[in-house]
Length: 242
Ligand SMILES: Nc1ccn([C@@H]2O[C@@H]3COP(=O)(O)O[C@H]3[C@H]2O)c(=O)n1
Ligand SMILES: [Zn+2]
Ligand SMILES: [Zn+2]
Image (cartoon, rainbow, N blue to C red; front, side, top):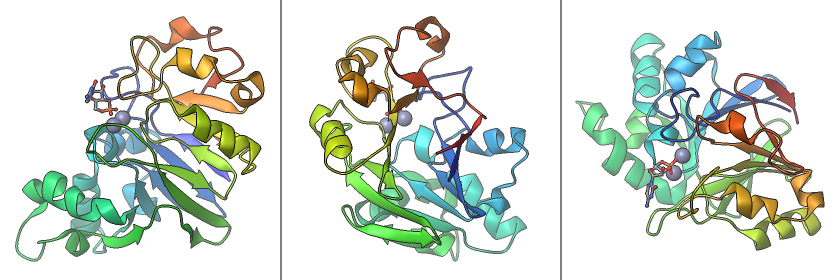
Protein backbone atom coordinates (compact mmCIF):
# COMPACT_ATOMS: atom_id res chain seq x y z
CA UNK A 1 0.00 0.00 0.00
CA UNK A 2 1.22 3.50 -0.81
CA UNK A 3 0.38 6.77 0.89
CA UNK A 4 0.89 10.19 -0.63
CA UNK A 5 -0.17 13.27 1.29
CA UNK A 6 -1.62 15.68 -1.27
CA UNK A 7 -1.45 18.15 1.61
CA UNK A 8 -0.07 18.11 5.14
CA UNK A 9 -1.29 21.46 6.46
CA UNK A 10 -3.77 22.35 9.14
CA UNK A 11 -6.96 24.29 8.46
CA UNK A 12 -5.17 27.66 8.45
CA UNK A 13 -1.89 26.66 6.76
CA UNK A 14 -0.84 28.64 3.68
CA UNK A 15 2.45 26.88 2.85
CA UNK A 16 0.79 23.49 2.79
CA UNK A 17 -2.43 22.21 1.28
CA UNK A 18 -5.16 20.73 3.47
CA UNK A 19 -4.31 17.46 5.17
CA UNK A 20 -5.71 15.03 2.61
CA UNK A 21 -4.08 11.79 1.51
CA UNK A 22 -4.05 9.48 -1.43
CA UNK A 23 -3.92 5.78 -0.63
CA UNK A 24 -3.09 3.39 -3.44
CA UNK A 25 -3.49 -0.36 -3.24
CA UNK A 26 -3.21 -2.62 -6.30
CA UNK A 27 -4.00 0.35 -8.55
CA UNK A 28 -7.08 1.43 -6.54
CA UNK A 29 -6.85 5.11 -5.56
CA UNK A 30 -8.64 6.24 -2.41
CA UNK A 31 -8.54 9.88 -1.35
CA UNK A 32 -8.93 10.33 2.40
CA UNK A 33 -10.62 13.70 2.83
CA UNK A 34 -11.21 16.23 0.09
CA UNK A 35 -10.68 19.69 1.51
CA UNK A 36 -10.94 23.17 0.03
CA UNK A 37 -7.47 22.87 -1.50
CA UNK A 38 -7.80 19.27 -2.79
CA UNK A 39 -8.67 20.14 -6.42
CA UNK A 40 -5.58 22.37 -6.75
CA UNK A 41 -3.35 19.99 -4.78
CA UNK A 42 -4.29 17.09 -7.08
CA UNK A 43 -3.81 19.29 -10.14
CA UNK A 44 -0.30 20.27 -9.02
CA UNK A 45 0.57 16.58 -8.59
CA UNK A 46 -0.74 15.87 -12.11
CA UNK A 47 -3.63 13.75 -10.82
CA UNK A 48 -7.03 14.27 -12.41
CA UNK A 49 -10.04 14.01 -10.12
CA UNK A 50 -11.44 11.38 -12.49
CA UNK A 51 -8.47 9.13 -11.64
CA UNK A 52 -9.75 8.68 -8.08
CA UNK A 53 -11.65 5.46 -7.44
CA UNK A 54 -13.24 6.68 -4.22
CA UNK A 55 -13.14 9.37 -1.56
CA UNK A 56 -13.49 8.71 2.16
CA UNK A 57 -14.48 11.50 4.54
CA UNK A 58 -13.47 11.72 8.21
CA UNK A 59 -15.56 14.73 9.29
CA UNK A 60 -17.30 17.79 7.93
CA UNK A 61 -14.78 20.61 8.37
CA UNK A 62 -13.86 22.57 5.24
CA UNK A 63 -10.26 21.35 5.16
CA UNK A 64 -11.68 17.81 4.89
CA UNK A 65 -14.82 18.24 2.74
CA UNK A 66 -14.55 21.66 1.06
CA UNK A 67 -13.43 20.19 -2.28
CA UNK A 68 -16.35 17.80 -2.63
CA UNK A 69 -18.56 20.27 -4.48
CA UNK A 70 -16.01 20.65 -7.27
CA UNK A 71 -15.34 16.92 -7.25
CA UNK A 72 -19.04 16.07 -7.56
CA UNK A 73 -19.61 18.68 -10.25
CA UNK A 74 -16.50 17.75 -12.26
CA UNK A 75 -17.53 14.11 -12.22
CA UNK A 76 -21.13 14.88 -13.21
CA UNK A 77 -20.58 17.54 -15.84
CA UNK A 78 -17.18 16.61 -17.29
CA UNK A 79 -17.15 12.84 -16.80
CA UNK A 80 -20.83 11.89 -16.58
CA UNK A 81 -20.69 9.66 -13.54
CA UNK A 82 -21.27 9.61 -9.82
CA UNK A 83 -18.08 9.24 -7.80
CA UNK A 84 -17.92 6.72 -4.97
CA UNK A 85 -18.06 8.37 -1.56
CA UNK A 86 -17.37 6.48 1.66
CA UNK A 87 -18.66 8.27 4.71
CA UNK A 88 -19.86 7.32 8.17
CA UNK A 89 -23.59 6.63 8.12
CA UNK A 90 -24.07 9.37 10.73
CA UNK A 91 -22.47 11.99 8.46
CA UNK A 92 -24.57 11.39 5.34
CA UNK A 93 -27.31 13.77 6.43
CA UNK A 94 -25.10 16.58 7.84
CA UNK A 95 -22.69 16.41 4.91
CA UNK A 96 -25.54 17.27 2.54
CA UNK A 97 -27.74 19.47 4.70
CA UNK A 98 -25.02 21.43 6.49
CA UNK A 99 -22.27 21.53 3.87
CA UNK A 100 -23.02 20.65 0.25
CA UNK A 101 -26.69 21.40 -0.34
CA UNK A 102 -26.19 25.17 -0.62
CA UNK A 103 -23.90 24.92 -3.62
CA UNK A 104 -25.05 21.68 -5.22
CA UNK A 105 -28.84 21.73 -4.98
CA UNK A 106 -30.51 21.98 -8.38
CA UNK A 107 -33.09 19.98 -10.27
CA UNK A 108 -32.01 16.36 -10.03
CA UNK A 109 -29.53 17.04 -7.25
CA UNK A 110 -31.60 17.06 -4.11
CA UNK A 111 -29.70 14.74 -1.81
CA UNK A 112 -26.17 13.41 -1.34
CA UNK A 113 -27.02 10.22 -3.23
CA UNK A 114 -27.97 12.25 -6.33
CA UNK A 115 -24.43 13.60 -6.62
CA UNK A 116 -22.39 10.71 -5.22
CA UNK A 117 -22.47 6.93 -5.14
CA UNK A 118 -22.73 6.98 -1.35
CA UNK A 119 -21.35 3.98 0.54
CA UNK A 120 -22.16 4.50 4.23
CA UNK A 121 -19.72 3.00 6.70
CA UNK A 122 -20.57 1.89 10.23
CA UNK A 123 -17.97 2.64 12.87
CA UNK A 124 -16.33 -0.48 14.24
CA UNK A 125 -17.03 -2.61 11.18
CA UNK A 126 -14.29 -3.64 8.76
CA UNK A 127 -15.30 -3.00 5.15
CA UNK A 128 -13.46 -4.12 2.04
CA UNK A 129 -13.25 -1.25 -0.45
CA UNK A 130 -11.19 -3.03 -3.10
CA UNK A 131 -9.04 -6.16 -3.34
CA UNK A 132 -6.49 -6.02 -0.50
CA UNK A 133 -7.86 -2.75 0.85
CA UNK A 134 -10.13 -2.67 3.87
CA UNK A 135 -10.99 0.12 6.27
CA UNK A 136 -12.55 0.44 9.68
CA UNK A 137 -13.79 3.75 11.05
CA UNK A 138 -13.20 4.53 14.71
CA UNK A 139 -15.18 7.31 16.34
CA UNK A 140 -12.64 9.67 17.89
CA UNK A 141 -13.19 12.93 19.79
CA UNK A 142 -12.65 16.25 18.01
CA UNK A 143 -15.22 18.92 18.80
CA UNK A 144 -18.17 18.51 21.15
CA UNK A 145 -21.29 17.73 19.17
CA UNK A 146 -19.40 17.07 15.93
CA UNK A 147 -18.79 13.50 14.87
CA UNK A 148 -15.34 12.64 13.58
CA UNK A 149 -13.90 9.28 12.51
CA UNK A 150 -10.33 8.06 12.38
CA UNK A 151 -9.46 5.23 10.01
CA UNK A 152 -7.72 1.88 10.34
CA UNK A 153 -6.35 0.71 6.99
CA UNK A 154 -5.87 -3.00 6.39
CA UNK A 155 -6.25 -3.66 10.13
CA UNK A 156 -2.81 -2.40 11.10
CA UNK A 157 -2.35 1.22 10.00
CA UNK A 158 -3.99 3.96 12.08
CA UNK A 159 -4.76 7.24 10.32
CA UNK A 160 -6.11 9.85 12.67
CA UNK A 161 -8.90 12.23 11.88
CA UNK A 162 -8.66 15.57 13.65
CA UNK A 163 -8.83 14.43 17.27
CA UNK A 164 -7.96 15.28 20.81
CA UNK A 165 -5.22 13.21 22.43
CA UNK A 166 -6.28 9.66 23.23
CA UNK A 167 -3.39 7.90 24.93
CA UNK A 168 -5.47 4.85 25.77
CA UNK A 169 -6.61 4.34 22.19
CA UNK A 170 -3.11 4.67 20.74
CA UNK A 171 -1.67 2.32 23.36
CA UNK A 172 -4.40 -0.27 22.84
CA UNK A 173 -4.07 -0.11 19.07
CA UNK A 174 -0.36 -0.85 19.24
CA UNK A 175 -0.26 -3.32 22.11
CA UNK A 176 -3.50 -5.23 21.56
CA UNK A 177 -4.48 -4.71 17.94
CA UNK A 178 -1.14 -4.99 16.20
CA UNK A 179 -1.12 -1.51 14.70
CA UNK A 180 2.35 -0.99 13.21
CA UNK A 181 2.06 2.51 11.82
CA UNK A 182 0.36 5.65 13.12
CA UNK A 183 -0.28 8.72 11.00
CA UNK A 184 -1.34 11.36 13.48
CA UNK A 185 -2.49 14.95 13.25
CA UNK A 186 -0.51 17.36 15.39
CA UNK A 187 -0.89 20.83 16.79
CA UNK A 188 2.62 22.17 17.28
CA UNK A 189 1.91 24.95 19.78
CA UNK A 190 -0.71 26.03 22.28
CA UNK A 191 -3.30 24.04 24.17
CA UNK A 192 -4.89 21.16 22.24
CA UNK A 193 -8.52 21.97 22.76
CA UNK A 194 -9.72 20.26 19.59
CA UNK A 195 -6.45 18.73 18.35
CA UNK A 196 -3.55 16.65 19.73
CA UNK A 197 -0.48 18.63 20.71
CA UNK A 198 3.10 17.73 20.01
CA UNK A 199 3.75 17.76 23.77
CA UNK A 200 0.99 15.20 24.31
CA UNK A 201 2.42 12.92 21.63
CA UNK A 202 5.89 13.34 23.13
CA UNK A 203 4.51 11.85 26.36
CA UNK A 204 3.90 8.53 24.57
CA UNK A 205 6.39 5.70 25.12
CA UNK A 206 9.25 5.74 22.62
CA UNK A 207 8.08 2.42 21.13
CA UNK A 208 4.82 4.12 20.06
CA UNK A 209 6.53 7.34 18.94
CA UNK A 210 8.76 5.26 16.66
CA UNK A 211 5.66 4.10 14.75
CA UNK A 212 4.25 7.62 14.46
CA UNK A 213 4.44 10.13 11.63
CA UNK A 214 2.94 13.61 12.02
CA UNK A 215 0.61 15.50 9.70
CA UNK A 216 -1.99 18.35 9.74
CA UNK A 217 0.65 20.80 10.92
CA UNK A 218 1.09 24.57 10.87
CA UNK A 219 3.25 26.62 8.50
CA UNK A 220 6.08 26.83 11.07
CA UNK A 221 6.63 23.06 11.09
CA UNK A 222 10.30 23.45 10.09
CA UNK A 223 11.01 25.04 13.48
CA UNK A 224 10.02 21.71 15.07
CA UNK A 225 12.29 19.47 13.02
CA UNK A 226 14.41 17.55 15.53
CA UNK A 227 12.01 18.43 18.36
CA UNK A 228 9.53 15.61 17.78
CA UNK A 229 11.22 12.86 19.78
CA UNK A 230 11.19 9.56 17.91
CA UNK A 231 8.43 10.83 15.60
CA UNK A 232 8.92 12.36 12.16
CA UNK A 233 6.89 14.62 9.92
CA UNK A 234 5.11 13.38 6.81
CA UNK A 235 6.09 15.48 3.80
CA UNK A 236 3.56 16.76 1.31
CA UNK A 237 3.76 15.10 -2.10
CA UNK A 238 6.18 12.33 -1.08
CA UNK A 239 5.08 8.76 -1.75
CA UNK A 240 5.49 6.38 1.19
CA UNK A 241 5.25 2.59 1.06
CA UNK A 242 3.29 1.70 4.16
N1 LIG B 1 -13.62 24.90 18.97
C1 LIG B 1 -12.85 25.11 17.92
C2 LIG B 1 -13.31 24.86 16.63
C3 LIG B 1 -12.48 25.10 15.52
N2 LIG B 1 -11.25 25.59 15.74
C4 LIG B 1 -10.35 25.86 14.60
O1 LIG B 1 -11.10 25.75 13.38
C5 LIG B 1 -10.52 24.72 12.58
C6 LIG B 1 -11.43 23.88 11.77
O2 LIG B 1 -10.66 22.88 11.09
P1 LIG B 1 -9.72 21.92 11.96
O3 LIG B 1 -8.67 21.38 11.11
O4 LIG B 1 -10.58 21.03 12.80
O5 LIG B 1 -9.01 22.93 12.96
C7 LIG B 1 -9.87 23.80 13.62
C8 LIG B 1 -9.25 24.80 14.54
O6 LIG B 1 -8.10 25.35 13.96
C9 LIG B 1 -10.79 25.80 17.01
O7 LIG B 1 -9.64 26.20 17.19
N3 LIG B 1 -11.61 25.56 18.09
ZN1 LIG C 1 -8.59 19.63 9.89
ZN1 LIG D 1 -11.57 19.32 12.05
